[in-house]
Image (cartoon, rainbow, N blue to C red; front, side, top):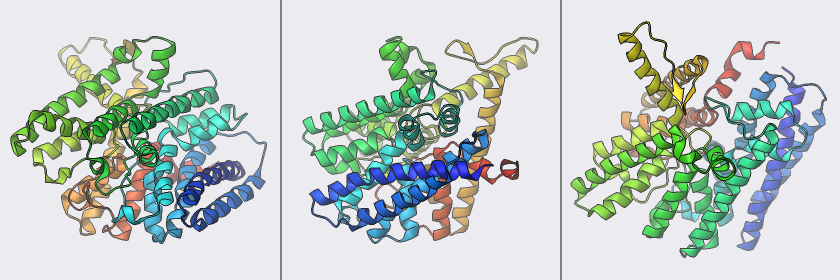
Length: 476
């Protein structure tokens, strides 16, 4: 393991993060708020970055360095991203929790009185979600020249879905395309929200939460604070778009306009949302007696929000029936599509596992038959199927372990269960004491550290972080 390479690249990442802190500094200046939190943050982050850049080396990267840089890069971003929150008076542990939740686009918050915090702090809170949505390492690759093979190693480590989805031979070009699509969708949402009567500041913050599938809101009532069905439908539409594979948009524009409709994962993603929304519409109509139009609006918004692991809400679903809440738990477990800004297990993994299970049933009846798993009319290699099975097993083990730890710390089982899946799947709100109108502030310190780890592990899809804790990883 070459530590000089790791420190040098982390230095470049921190310098970039320091530059982004200038934006909320401008927001603080515009609203006449204290500049100190961001001046101190910029100084500390940028200075640390330049110090680490002194470790420059021309040695070649290995695969191990790529994994270490990505995992530690996200950890470093969360640590230094917490400085503005600490300067705002939030305790270091809570600030770290909020920062990690932002960068990993989890959206679980420890803030109880959100509106009492300065606009610049809330803007930073939203902006780090947007940076984390497409990936801070992918942004780093897109900006930093001449990474070459090293850039490909970083790209694979940060976006480790079941299959590699390159749009161009050079990974830097792929990173730029993905960030361009991300920026265009972000820009469009801000314009549409402003046309709907939302202020520029609120439009930007709502976009930060939506396009990143993050879920932080500047208001305790989340999207419900706008009291506008139009804003809800706009948010739901852009959230749905963010939960799909961004590579498909490029192919739909430049390769085949029917790419989206032909893609099996997108078809399954859409079908799941429609089926879950239909069932939830019926349950809300039955349980609360609301008309079908309002029931559908509540259902489609929350199914899309939870399945894409965004976590924005318009009402307190803690008050819904157990059957209605179970629908949200199931879709939150599944998550968004591979190549999206959403978290969770991912739709493509669930789809491949279902196809694999069906194939095993077929082989039980026809043991001599030769049949493999296909996705989009292409054979899925057996090693990918095996890696998906392994991923799901490890994912469930982490989920069960964190649920057990939280319950031992005194939390009720529903809160423990949903807090674990909300953080590991980067969903945001859970249920009971961590419901959509509550916060994670009441969780014991050890529990917060467990959930911080969940966010970190879940955002990098398990392997990239878990590898750091294996002895073999650090051997030469």
